Length: 528
Image 1 (cartoon, rainbow, N blue to C red):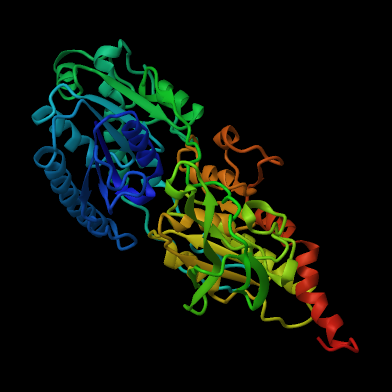
Image 2 (cartoon, rainbow, N blue to C red; image 1 turned 90 degrees about the vertical axis):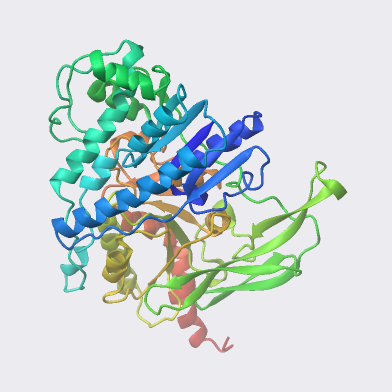
């Protein structure tokens, strides 16, 4: 069986989860993706063959339609050649089933069809939809220039949207992928165009006739005689595909927590005392003293590396391993009382003066509501400034944004021009093994996913729930399938709502430790 994803293998949890389950069932797997090597438990598995793809050339955005089209075309060519070599020349054996994760469908769909027709004749096809590429491509970028107003806070202009022709091409390709299964499923195309996911008007050419003639014969040739199935992440996506593109029976397969995302087990050995530093504060914590390492990120204002958590290696009882013990990496509690909060982070209680830590995983694309982030953090910063009558070097809140993407520079510029006074913003690209640990160190998770399609669900929220984090999430209709407002999450619609949610996280105790305590100690007879 082959899995194809045009994304970083270490940060493609859905595909790696598919592969891990099949390997456990005794199936031989060929995994094709960028980056590498694959993460555990895939790395070094005897039944796994991994073919890494080179990173594609960057696509120029914000410099006009010609620059976008030329660089996008070149990127497609490079990806197509690399993928063709991997799937036709380097494939270790003839595939029985190929699973294609979309988006992106360009150029993966065409290359996979060619590979099946040329090398893997008769292979079945499974398309795993986790969003729609044409809605991602056609989405705007709210929040990039939001800092340009409201008191002259600076900012950068939003990038130019991709040409409409590129968006329509992406939609046409994805609609074609959806129609692969019509040849034998007995389904017919919808008779009329249906609105795009997430709202908007109908799509030209979304309708059509039932599969027949030359087109049906071609589809059968490249899809194993029509053995085609579709996975979707939500009920809303399944319903939209059925109504709009005629996908007859897509199977809902929601993202679920992976084994690495869970609160760490307690240590087996007696602990020693060490300290954690962040935001100018110190907190005692119990950890084994033999081996610790920092988790670091970059301060958005100073550009310096900042330690936001410490990780210790603990020995725990495990009867399934030689010697009865095994090593686990666990986050050092940032507060001496273990915080009593979610994920070992401390729940924002301000104990020891350590500010709450909020972690958001982002791909820095227009599929996320950065206007809410910029507006919300600036609104909260103004509130905190109004409550504080004294200058302090310790932030009231630390926000860590992980990941890479095209909008990162613009959003960080909007957040740091001018700098926030009472909120520290960190950013960085965390290794796959460190991301679960960063969530375990946090007091809350922040999900800015606004969904360009309106029918997908964010994997990042699944990971946050798995480690026991409360989730602050941007609301949209399909999100109710995953998060319940007031129970597993606090949902917000805009920057003001995000500021309210973060304000509750900061809380009275944290503000008292940061603002009131220094004043009281300054007038005390016992100068502390």
